[in-house]
Image (cartoon, rainbow, N blue to C red; front, side, top):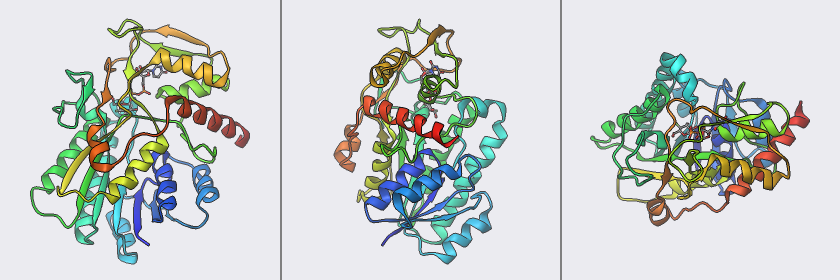
Length: 336
Ligand code: UFG
């Protein structure tokens, strides 16, 4: 059974990926120091996967600790999620973001070289396209400078990976550029656990529906889109998770390749609000507010390459994701 090191495997996308890996007969070795996650997700993973994974509480920025994992286990491949991910916070504490996200990545890459793993999968983001000239982006759409230190850590992460691949590497790398992952596992055992006030749209919606927040503020209704609100490519987190399994199975000829992980369809903020009300049967209080600095008007993925070369497409709808996110929020309430 192949052992897959999953850094950040107790986090939001990481935990869903662990479930997909187990379903496909891999053995995930989670490395996570839980600083941005919680035992709730680990307990949920135990419910879903039993003992078919292992967990190590390790900070990947501590190189010797990370290397000891490779020394004691024969790791076949690495999926690297562990990183800070809040756009707003990264503007307040940029050094913390650069230190954690880049040192962590470089340590993991060095371990992949030293211990000769077969494959490396990097969590990238559509943030590397910056504010694109086109609404639908291909992997070949030129990258632009991102708007935040968080975005730069993904942009620079891809650059570091590209630079090391100028020389032959023992491992093959895939960068997966996620669009907007939302939703939760349909079982309700794992899902998103935002720390403090959520920045992202969907956890803000579900917390408002649960009465934790008074109302949602829609950031700007004067954008040049049909209803005036921003458009994003929201994708179910279980579809994102499955893309990682396909990435591990991919036998492409390129030592380094990049894939968009989205649905190919854009949805506006107001469409998300209305769909949530339809799915939940609740009235969601919301107000129209000012634009949020740094938001881009519209971006959605072209997913032809992922379909053609990874044999992967999103299987679930935005409505499925909204239903699963709401189910998760209600389960969380029971935990309190
Ligand atoms: N929004 C609101 N109200 C809220 C929260 C969000 O109206 O309370 C709007 C935003 O203005 C935006 C849309 O909902 O138009 C989506 O916002 P999110 O914060 O959920 O997602 P973003 O597209 O801004 O950010 C995501 C990822 C980042 C990544 C970025 C790249 O969260 O990690 O895409 O574009 F960098």
